[in-house]
Amino acid sequence: MDVASIQVIVLSFVTLVTMAANSKLEPLFSDELRYTSSIDQVGNLKWVQGGEGTIVTLFNRIQRSQITKDTAFRLFPLSWELQKGMYPNDVKLNFHGEFQYSLFRDKFRVPDNNMFTPAWVTSCLIEASMFGKSPKPSQRQIDLALNAIDKYRNHNKPYKNSEMTFWHQKLNRTASYYQSSPDNLFEVLKMPDYLPQKLIEEILSFMGLDDIEKVLEKLFREGNMFFQAFHIPPDFDDTFVNIGLGGLLALATDRGDYSESFQTWKQQNSNLTSVFESVKKYAYRPFSTTSNQTTIDPRTYMYLHTFLEQAEQNGQDVALISTWIQDTVEVVSLFDKGVSMPFNVNNVDITVSANFIYGIIMCTCTKVCNQPDIYIDTDIQQIFMNTTSLIAHELKTNLSSRPDLALTY
Ligand SMILES: *[C@@H]1O[C@H](CO)[C@@H](O)[C@H](O)[C@H]1NC(C)=O
Ligand SMILES: *[C@@H]1O[C@H](CO)[C@@H](O)[C@H](O)[C@H]1NC(C)=O
Ligand SMILES: *[C@@H]1O[C@H](CO)[C@@H](O)[C@H](O)[C@H]1NC(C)=O
Ligand SMILES: *[C@@H]1O[C@H](CO)[C@@H](O)[C@H](O)[C@H]1NC(C)=O
Ligand SMILES: *[C@@H]1O[C@H](CO)[C@@H](O)[C@H](O)[C@H]1NC(C)=O
Image 1 (cartoon, protein in one colour):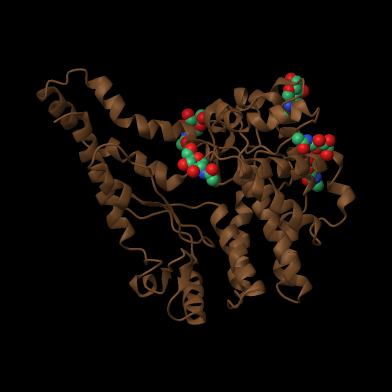
Image 2 (tube, helix red, strand yellow):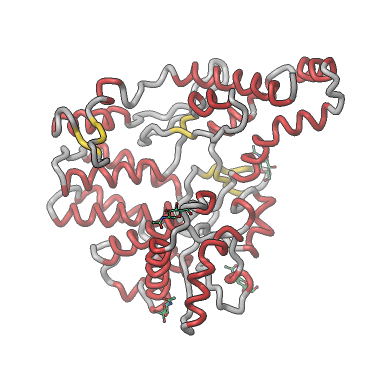
């Protein structure tokens, strides 16, 4: 038996406990739906059976799965924290290496509460009914999601704002600061602590692995890595998906739908200046002379340096939307308060960029911010135009041999 085998035992224990807890949740997609879609010969997804019937079945299932009451996390027997208004979604971890790990890749999943899922699912439901043949979600269904999303604002700012955080912020009284972390996942990562440490130590020393400290550290390093990385600041991805949702509700209002939900969204997002100020403050400006504007993580630089070199050759300036609403100066003091970007440095991510472009378009083409002069000045215009050019450049650049650079966030 070696360290890897012990790790497998610990992971098996954690996976079994989480599987038992998950078995109490209703499965979202059961077998009856699996055979309703298939891939045809040219690779397109096709609805084999049902057609509209399938859409209605899916619609009903999504509606039924929405969580209608808060549940707190409990350890014995394990039950998850679930927040009212959420749609079910899981964290999966990419276990790789030893053969036995494929089991954990398959079976290990932890239900999560985050802002992105209800915002995205609600947007899809509204679009599917507005532009397709899907049934219309009820106002209650929309409002449940809006009220859930409303809890994911940046509470560390002393004013009303629409800087959204992926995970719910909770006040940490020791740090006197709000921190954003995946609660269910953190509880699961703590589980190995409940295994009798004495027993593990005795097994290890029986096997002649005397440097127990080192072995245990190796065993739990992955958990510690998540504990460190997942104390995240608000981000522009969630922020602009929320603004896009506001834009969709505004469009729906023009067609006589969801006007009350749109009013709710507007009241909840009454200070959009907070977003546009931050976009300008945290933009990546590689040709600036201020170091906190020119600092970016190396993976980002690796994939976009050809874009920057071209711009420099053409004498063009560049300003791009970043991922995190934090910079390298702030992280120095906020790290100890439990709010820090992963790797302590910001990045530019193409999927975040796409959601930024989407949010700006939904905002300026609807009642959300169609008094453009207030929000859209020449700097925002530049960030919008340059981010669009970057997306176009990356679409033309074949980086398929570097999947590690595909999602930098
Ligand atoms: C709106 O946000 C800005 C920061 O961009 C802040 O200075 C201002 O006080 C906020 N306004 C209100 C009414 O909270
Ligand atoms: C970046 O650094 C400059 C100079 O140190 C400072 O004035 C500015 O507030 C910083 N920007 C942010 C977003 O913290
Ligand atoms: C509160 O924050 C401090 C500093 O970041 C951290 O060490 C501590 O673990 C946090 N407590 C909880 C309960 O998260
Ligand atoms: C960025 O936008 C500015 C202002 O619109 C423009 O002058 C510049 O050429 C753009 N840069 C690139 C690389 O497209
Ligand atoms: C992209 O690069 C990969 C390997 O680097 C290659 O296999 C593939 O054919 C390329 N695709 C295109 C469209 O050039």
